[in-house]
Amino acid sequence: MNAGTKAIHLSRRAGQILIPSLLVIPSLLLFVYLLFETTKISREKIRQQFAVDSAAFIQMGDYTNLLNRTAYVNGAFPYRIFKEAYECPPEKPLQKSDQSGQICPYDMLYAAGAFPKYKDDTSGSQPSSLDGLSKWEIEFAPARPDINKNPPDIAQQSGIRSHAKNADGRGPDVLHLITWEQGNKIMLEWGTAIGYYKFYAQVYTLLGSVEESQYTVFDRLTDNFNFFRKSYYLNANTQECTDNPQLCGDVGLHGTNSFYGNRIKKESNTFLMHYARKIVFFAKVFTGATLPPYYLGETTPPMDMTTMAKDGLFQLATIPDSTLGTLGTGLEVYQSWQAPKNYFSVDLNMLGRCRGMDKPCVHARVATQCPQLKDGNNCVWPNPTPKYQTRLYP
Image 1 (cartoon, rainbow, N blue to C red):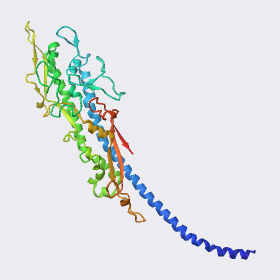
Image 2: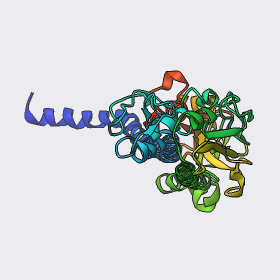
Image 3: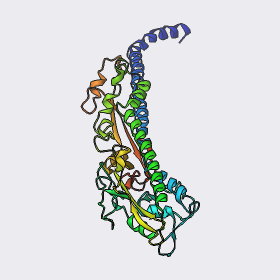
Image 4: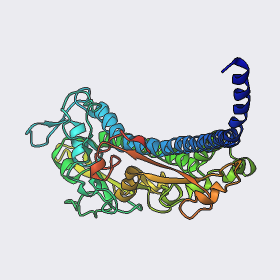
């Protein structure tokens, strides 16, 4: 076959590629469009997921901060304050009236149930370092067993019961800063006892003010969950958020077992501040006479702590186990989002409907957990351990 004949055959075959091209090229174009649209929707979903994860984590941080700070106020702060103020040394021990020995003011006040301390505290030494422990076993003395429980077992918000009746016949609604037995058996002068009372009232007034401020800040931050809304607004950048910034992220916040359904509020008894309304103490009043040189004085009537603050003298703040357990398991956030339009005019919003909504949604589960998660996630009280951490689940 000569060269001319070959050329004729090749020219005839050139048209054969036309038919496959009519099928392959449009298919390639459709594939390119499909890849582009898939990438676009995937990118949007990833952005929405990141926005919800970030918003939920930031908002749960407010819960974590409140729980940790409350744990400090309940346990570590009063323990260290009274330990450093009344431990021996620097304080001098008090003599017992029967000459049987001495007792340190710190041990005396703790035994009366005035403040909590670490169970393995060492007398005469600096406050124990608890950082390495997963459980800070700080509690009141057995003289006040009722206060070492968490609601609803503890006394109601209107006041905290102290120990059972003493020999003075006072009822259980009165906090005995220095008991009748201590006042009778310890050589404690009335002026010194007044000093103990003033310092005690000053410390717990300050602790109450700190806790009240902490709750007020938390309440404002969770009133409309603005941290969640603002974080979601900045990261999601949806048209709905642009049009209605105040409602941004509202679907996720109001979902089943989400933030609005698990707010910590005084009004719902999920945050309780407990107070002592009256205080009684006993001490010796020296007369200057030879016999008897003193008599046992008492605060008559009891010191009315509601004259200093309407609720009385703050003692501690608590949160029910059920509330803490829910926060430890995690709050569920299901946030809907608008799928963008696509080249194929497929309504992805209807195809991807989520949990009864007319749009697809992204999900985040966020929790605040302490090392005692298996014990009801309660590190607030008893055993106040400020080691709550925010955790985000996929």
